[in-house]
Length: 307
Image (cartoon, rainbow, N blue to C red):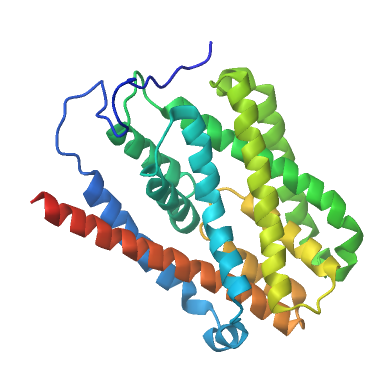
């Protein structure tokens, strides 16, 4: 029986109080500010090994690059907002919470963002029961979509494998593939007990995740091409596949920095391409830090107004 997690009152605006507990001052804003400060610190700490001089030399001045970078950064929260708007009818106020969800997952611990968003939903939306089922289904379907896309890209990239010296990493790649395939098969076999949304909702969520992954993959390759337009397509196919494969690894914070480190090892003498991956990792870290700091300031200002 599908889990009906949400019932919206027909005559009220969004941002309701939960039904199953008394109204009280929640520590959510304090926790949000604390997590945002941790995010800023984590971004600074993880940037310590980046070669800033090489990165700065590659920073492009093209407005097209910065426009695509902004779109690629926000496309994840935007797709999540579309999903929860369809499921729950969330308004614009949910977008900031979904950006925080992205940052917490990327810089701190995987799925911490889902925990944060669950708490945000409990505080700000009107539910008959807990919203856990829908948030869990969205996360599970995201993993399935990511795994499926990774396998397809691996098949596409296989002819270009000769470009990279991956022979020493064959066992690690094999274990990663086993994890990707095994986790997806396990989820599909247990889908009746794991998933609680209606079938049409599951199809919608899965389709949005596939479109998001396709869009971010194309945007990543486009950003790389804008910086190094003379590099042949095969390199981008291989690198975007490796990036997607790394994104499937659980409990690995800041996968962009991990990806940059792996490409430096794999590419060896391809100095410009290695520096480009470090550039993208550095820009993503800087974006996380700036957005996290803006959330800290917003939380402090909102707390000051309530006093």
